[in-house]
Image (cartoon, helix red, strand yellow):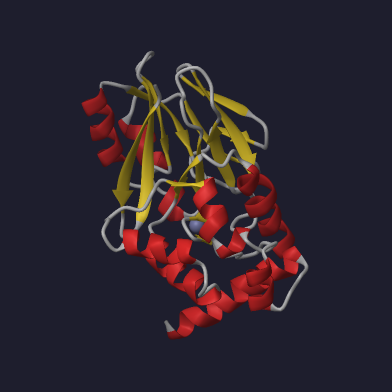
Length: 258
Ligand SMILES: [Zn+2]
C-alpha cells in the first residue's frame, strides 16, 4: 500500500512524502524544508530517491539544492519542461511516467500558474487502493492558483479538462492550506450550495484540510463549476472559459475587502 505523509512547511505550504512500503523507496513533493521530510523518511524506514517538483516558485522548488546536498540516495529531481525548476535533473511532460519503487506516477501538464507547472497522478494500480494527485498551485481545496502569466484557456484546460476529469475518488493533495478563504468565497458565489457550508463547518474543526477529493472539488470549488448554472449566473458568463476567468477576477476583487 502506498503511504502518503503530509508535512507542512513555511507558513501554509504542504510538502509530501510518497513511500512504497514494499521496496522501501520514496519520493518527496516540493521539499522546500527538506529536514522535516528527511526525518519523516527515517521514521518510515524508507530511502528518498527522487524529488517531484510541481513548479519553479521558491516556496516549492527552493529546497531542491539543499535536499540534493543532504540525501545521498537521491538520483533524480523532476520538474516541468521549461519551468526552470531549481536543481532539476530531468524535465518531464504530460504523460511521462515516473516510478517510485513499484508505484507508477504519471505527469500531468497543468500550466497557467507557471508555464511549466505539472501535477503528479498516482492512478489505481497494484498496492494503490485510491488514486491521488499532487496538484501544486493549480488546484487548491476550493480554489485555484493565480494565473500570473497564464491564460484563462490554460487554467480552464488544467482545472476542468485535466484535473477535473480524474476519477472522482482521487485524493487531492495541493500546495497550500488556503481552504478557509477559498470556501468563504465559494459560499459568497453560491449561497445556496449546502455542500460548501458543510465543508466550511468541517474546516473550522480541523487544522489540515488535505486531502480533498476530485468529487468534493466538483461539488464545492467554483473554478471547476463553471458549467453549473449557479456559477454562470454569478459571473453572468455562459462560456466556461470566460466564466472561469470571471470567477478569478471576482475572487481577486472580493479578496481586497475580505
Ligand atoms: Zn506558486
